[in-house]
Image (cartoon, rainbow over all chains, first blue to last red; front, side):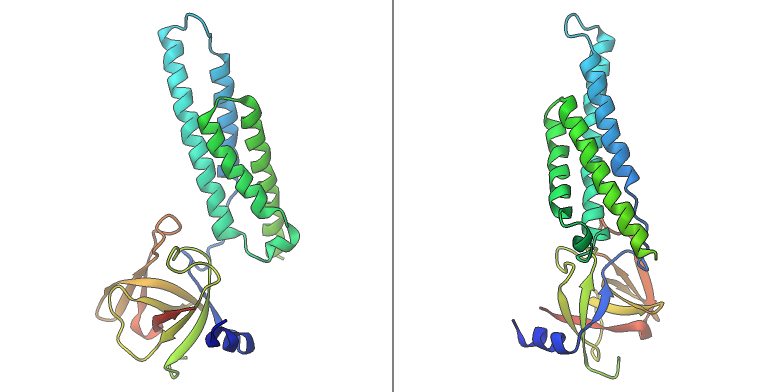
Length: 145
Length: 90
């Protein structure tokens, strides 16, 4: 450990925020949840399309649903990463020791849902995001006390 | 704080990543000139912030985050509120 870090242990440094705002505190888990719910809905639509003799409109819907699933899985991952890197702090690990694992798993599920059409995977993603949303709500509630 | 030539800060949050991640410590030099491209610490409303100098006006310094995904905001602060520029990350 270098000498400055030793000095910091004896005389703690001041905090400087590398953040966008005051800190703004403007975080929300709903965008991630909406994105995950959209992935579920799109998988439902894709799986509901006829497998034989699809019409032009069926094919049009298929393309649009796949594109929307892709976009919302990407959006879900983006929102989760914002919560993980900007909202959650090291002290939250005391209350949520599985925080990193849960977000990592959810991010992986975002990618999996882009790669595949699977209701099981879509519901797994939704469940993981809801779990993160619950942690977020509890962390936010305890920080506003 | 400006009376001292050097100050130590601990960085929180990620809007200056990947160059300055959450938890990194920095040393600022407070007596020299600030230049465009420097990473500086400034004071605002009782808090300290770390941003990169984008432009220097007559009385104000304009700063922004490195991580545009985290923040697109442009800060403008009075020169007197600039504490110093980062000279060391540790």
